[in-house]
Length: 451
Image (cartoon, rainbow, N blue to C red; front, side, top):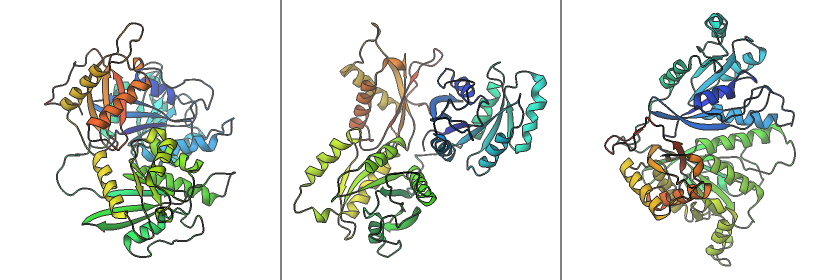
């Protein structure tokens, strides 16, 4: 599975960003006494006891944003909580339990991930009794002080103990079921396609836009393999606040994308690509989900338009998604559906593939020799070694002398090399460049790859 995410939450001004910077070992998130400075999620890769995890800093829960971004901030926080492998609930020992702490604790009762309560600003031993007051929330309490550098190792140990066990991706046996999210604008034929697949009227289909209000899971089999199709509400462009039903439909559809293994982005062959399609594509990319562009209702244009014209149209529109495959189908008749699902299964396998450390380092060395990174102030950027640390998405960490010396263009070059030469040709790849600490070896033994 992917790199575990350790999400930091809490009310404003309890020191979440300070904790994030403290654990990361560098100043990444803005630390300011003004409530609401952190709005978007901020992430950073760290290593704890030979395991890589992503730290995620979030905005303050319950704050009323001065720029009317409260709903956006809350959605970012809820998304982080939904994706978390472990949650750090940060509180302030000096101020004690506040009403907003109670509200955060209430919301976290429904979280699926384990929760550790981090009592920040416990600057001296005499404050331990004040930190113990937070036991009323029923959580493990770790007292720390980012300002005085107290309790860091105890917190790291608590995180390591509560992380989920690494998945054995190479374990032999039956392949897991693939979850396929089917998303797109309203009335693009998503539910009709699922009905064709299961050969029954399992879902309501209608020409009325917005018939599917919630995400629906449908299990079916093809060629002896079991799949789960997630039918989602049709996305639409927000032209105002809208009603609660539309808000929750969008939220559930986005959640379906997050829990899918492969996403089928449906496009209507008879309509131009819209802003909603672009927003959907951006969201899928943000989640690092394997995707297929599915041009539905192709029977209406097959005799008058060559497929190459639509392919060029898609490539010109989604320039950063050139690796995404394209399928032309007719959902109502089932034309090309089997090939579509076979291709989705191929993407699923790619997203779960692993490469040996020795193979990866040989490829990185050849790529840098063929096209060295540009000099920065007369210094040559160096990559010492790399390793794949996770799957779904394939996640590669390259240890170098200075990550800032590698421009975005060179990172894109490396990603292109990985797609060309590794079994990840059509799926998103997460790439991290991390500064090698002096104590780390120059190159791990191929027989003992890093996790």
